Picture 1: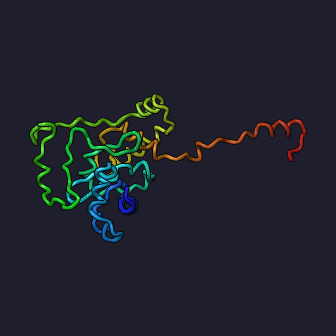
Picture 2 (picture 1 turned 30 degrees about the vertical axis):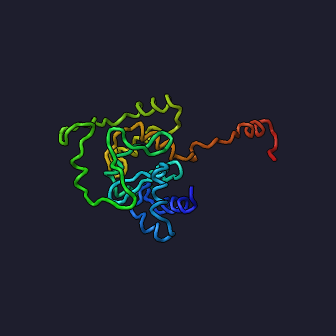
Length: 213
């Protein structure tokens, strides 16, 4: 990959929001001297997912970045976030049932209304149905964690999403199991998970009249 394309990818990552979106690639390109060809290289290589209006999503954002759930600032592009999902590896991919229009890096569309008329898999607008989300119980989350070898606290997970109304950013949650996987990737070991020193030997020494050094 050209060095100019690598530099553009680096600066897009620095300027992206907490969900990996960047809406100002042109200004970044101008500042570092990158070209539309560099942007096209990143799109063709699968490093960026393009959207209308010149918005781009960094494909491996969650692989390369960690943001604590309580410090996460939702993206201002929730509609575009609904068009992708995050794999267990942390990589963004396009939703299989929703088409994302091809975007020419040399020009951005200004027609926002056209997307509202698109159908999903041949279903006319207004007749599309979505699966209703049902919040899990603590036992549901615990069973899923045991099944997959996850070590998160199910009650803490439930409490967090109960408090925010079961939303991911500003969007209603669609898949709580995906949220668990994201939680596992983002959660760092807490103080409660660190090993507790064994002081049992000290008590024996005191009982037997020993002196601790």
